[in-house]
Length: 257
Image 1 (spheres, rainbow, N blue to C red):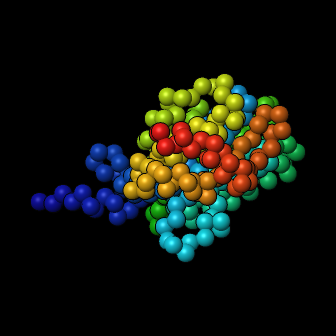
Image 2 (image 1 turned 120 degrees about the vertical axis):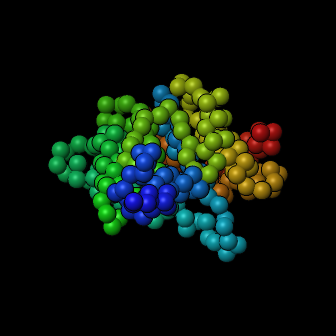
């Protein structure tokens, strides 16, 4: 009589479903996302904001050389949580998709078009032997040619969803809980930036053993902020001194959080 395969056998190949209908390698990819540095996006009527944190895992690590938010096209930004190498490859592909669309049709692509193209690649890597899923989730924020503000999240399994606001990564649970409380669609981009900083701070405190006072003092060095507004429709990344000033302004709120 044939023996049933042990549960561990189902995670040896990406193409094998477990009896409960799961692809274990995809589940493990989601775990890689949950352990990544936190990123978030906030959509408003005035534009879309992307924010991300960085963590100094080694004393000699140069955080200035690490990017978490990238320009996918003039009107689209992207950030990620999970394996940085996987994120870099998919972001490069997103840029290629955007350039090809412009050359073919003579106009910029929509945010959803670029997001769907990346999600399609992620999905393909869940159904072929000899490969593994991408251990990364991406947030695409942009202002479409018709003026629509969009925010999308892709997942390692190839799905993508539209959001008003969403956080991914290590501090995502706490950050999402905070965003659910404060979010309004008519937020100004300035208010969205403030909420993003507080959400990232809350997520950082909940997922690390750092002290609030020490982190609040230097938090401006650990985050990136970018936005695309409906008027300019141009990806803009805040300078580090502007971020440091914003964090200083919010110090009391950070310590009270």
